[in-house]
Image (cartoon, rainbow, N blue to C red; front, side, top):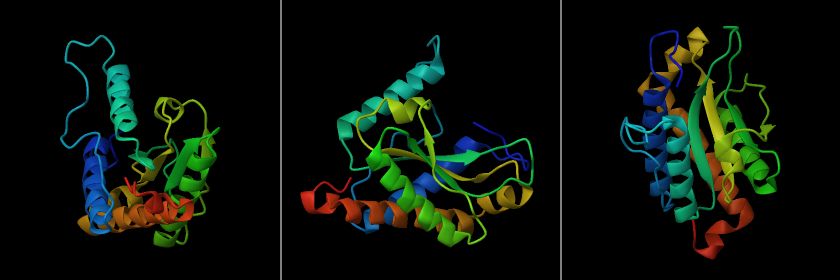
Length: 185
């Protein structure tokens, strides 16, 4: 993962926000399955390609859980410090993923009305293209932007970000009627 301008590690921020997201969703009676709950990767130390093994393990967890939606929390980075704003990615060939991304992007935009980022289709991200369930990648902010990097390390902003993502997830679940199927995962 990335290292922020303030020295913060993306992987730690991702986990902190994901844990808060889990609490919000569980409070709304949504079953949450985390792909990781500790600061470790999902690979064997002697694996020849740890990143590939980690991604395959995550996909296996997602496929076994068969959730209504899978959300991968990340932080973005760019070579120009002025670039900022949360953005949600989805698999280009997934209408469900696009619908989910729209719900999350809308909720994240309400958190920061100055954020003009739009959802973005992608057909190369391994996690997006190798799953059968709708998957979105929520880039919660830019670690390369000093203002966002400063906010992303605070409990208050992490809670607000997790709350916005949770609201987007709940909106998606309501919009597709997934809750009526008794799944809500």
